[in-house]
Figure 1 (cartoon, rainbow, N blue to C red):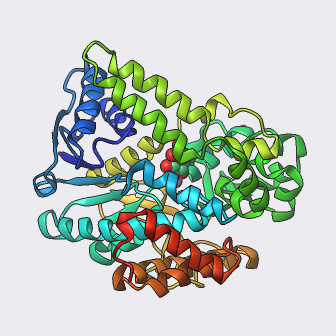
Figure 2: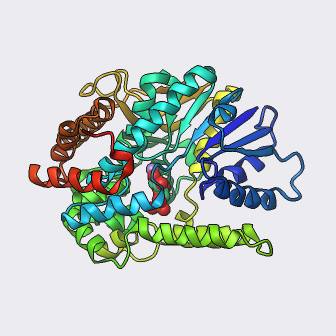
Length: 446
Ligand code: G6P
Ligand code: MN
């Protein structure tokens, strides 16, 4: 089986490769093709993978190419993990927004819109090529903003593109752990929303909802990441556990202030950290896997550090440090390739799941996965406050998609202006001005 990874020179590719090495079952991936426009990044990552595979019998064959068509032909699965504009682009997304006093984050608020506007045209071009060159391939989209990018691609690939994120899985795992659920796989997590904008409303084990037990116990509730981030009282008011990214909405003012005061934005930190990594790995005497591991540990330890700081949440739990998105990707691929039925929280088309959205809207929801793809489970309606946010943000995503298609600058302004975290049409206009002057990838907006 052939797996193609777009963004194959990316920093997190060794995680996926590590998960593949652990898969010994019949029907596993035997060929990995890394695609990236940057040959140097490809050779750095290829070195890490070679060290990682040393001594592993029947490790998949890994090749690298800068030719997209060659990479796609014959692929059974395509992982799309690209970063249009690189980490320098991410740092600029954040900086421009923060200078206007609004949130700069790669997936939420103004920063997410800027990143989406840059990424959607590239993702659409990839989707078109996959449809032409590998029409039977399944595309697993990792590229942020993952919900929006998956929806853009689904217009060309239908249900053959599925978006993934590890944050709902991590959240479900943490709740199951504090509730003492022995095997988290036995729990059904009642989670729904958009990517980075969802809520856990229940956690059922043996047909019984265990979440009320958590909400009733302040000690238990305050003992894990989301409890520390949002505070016990707010979680009890909501009667649900929000995805950690909702911290940017519920505590926007504090998050913006902390981001503005931080020495470096997340994007700038990762840009510098990764440029050191790629530089170091070019030296022939260096142990590439070791450098990669060290860099990764530092990245994980500092994830959402400013948010945790404003909440006084302290360090991350050791158990939360290995994100696990490679595990979601592998589980999804196995379920499809071998008809191993499983339940995963994924980004798929809504169909009739949430009645407030149309059938084509990509949402994040538990799905049954089998050889025919991902089938969303029926979900209870969201409470009004959550419906309000989901509908407002989906409307913004639709403006982004329409701006990317038409190239209309006015539509891009509308996308920014309608976002709940952008507080003036004038700010939206200035953001479009500043983003188009800093990002070559936005030159199409007229
Ligand atoms: C979480 C999010 C991902 C994000 C990742 C890394 O897992 O769900 O969407 O890509 O964190 O975040 P970072 O700030 O380290 O790039
Ligand atoms: Mn994510």
